[in-house]
Image: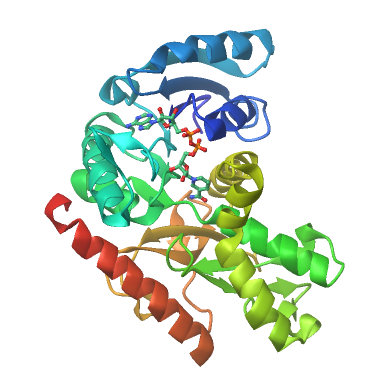
Length: 331
Ligand SMILES: NC(=O)c1ccc[n+]([C@@H]2O[C@H](COP(=O)([O-])OP(=O)(O)OC[C@H]3O[C@@H](n4cnc5c(N)ncnc54)[C@H](O)[C@@H]3O)[C@@H](O)[C@H]2O)c1
């Protein structure tokens, strides 16, 4: 294993960035490896990163290596091991004189950004680089980025860990158990309100969480919709989208990829479908994943989906296919 790791973070001056970046260098994610940070922002706010760099220095993190910040993604990408692509243009802002309201407009604008980032990662990133897309619409942004570069040894993911963490939290509260006991909490499909949080495969000590709960009404009328709508609920309550929990989920994803997955568990992220579970090839879909002893990220393929789970997954897959169609000129 390398003694140093280089991590690129886009959207570094944003809310998630402020919570995420210090925790990349506190020793809990990359152990005793030195972490070199390459922080990327748009030209209008890149100068703010000087303040963040000062705070990182002042925090005395023993594992902090170099800190660079730039508005040029390609420069930041050179030999990077990890790319945390948080930056994207949110819905509701005025972009080039037009208010961005429609998901299709959002897909097009962010899509253009992810084409360039995907090319740069393929050209300049480490050949085994791992890429986690957080910026929404995360699955389709990741599909665009991956398609633009297409280096098979680089791994592209879109984040669904926050949804998985939310689901675990709700289940643990319902049955008064500790979150750490819940294994195999899979989010299938798109990181959107169509996602399917799979309560049927979730386990505690080899016992099905669904059996422990034994309350189908609660599952269908509270658990599933509340996981699907939790992002909106946080926005309504906070006036801004989830930031500290999103940062924690990004860190959890990196940790899951950097360590061999314990037997009897898996982690959640969306990866490129190769037809597993009859999901059509060529979309970024949430699957159960494992990290192998060789450091590969693989889909776990031996889980069973009930008819109900399958029909919920199909809804989300259809949404991903529609998003793919909307950006076909970028693929
Ligand atoms: N996948 C998830 O679970 C999840 C959860 C929460 C938020 N999100 C998404 O994460 C993204 C960031 O959220 P936030 O709260 O940090 O937003 P924010 O608005 O506080 O910060 C985003 C930052 O990205 C920057 N940015 C925009 N385009 C960029 C580009 N091309 N290159 C570099 N930087 C760029 C902006 O200047 C801004 O500073 C949003 O798209 C949000 O919807 C995803």
